[in-house]
Image (cartoon, rainbow, N blue to C red; front, top):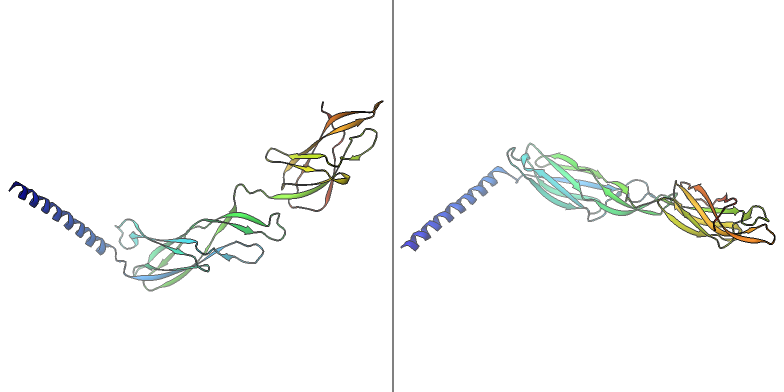
Length: 266
């Protein structure tokens, strides 16, 4: 008998619980009427190729999140209706729930990164860009069809550095018996500043070519056995250093640079 009373009590509690859930569901259904529909269409653009005029379409597969606050359907409701559309041939199109008075639909595009083809005179052929778009909003009501345009903004990733190629014809006093000699062929030239370093090998007639970051000042340095005008002739190690300023673009023009007498380095 005791077990039977316990069962009845349990059944009564379950009945109350499921009845409450059903009331909540019914109340929710009555609160948010999502049966009325309208269509939102968006063209999604990004600057992917600077060799062609105008914008390109954002890549296929780019996701666009559509959001409508539940408050549009009932001022006292919380939360939001959301769905995701996928760009195809630069376009997304989706049917959304609305009211006769209209709702506000927010469209948020997912970020993406892609190499951007640069213009003809750029230092780099391609640059990896991060693409972001501000949210767009459209007001729409029952039966309407509205179209918006969304534009991505792009910025180079922080680790991108514009590099330029510079060619030099280098002179230095590496032989006291001569005047204004070429830096010897085969000399290793160190090129550097606080943020980068590289090397170049001097070729015939003191010419060498080096890639450096655009629009910065940098040092160039090499070491050589200097021929001293003594009797008998002697040789000592000297360090030669000079600084220069990198241009904004690569150039085939040969720049002359004189490293002077150098400093004794032994």
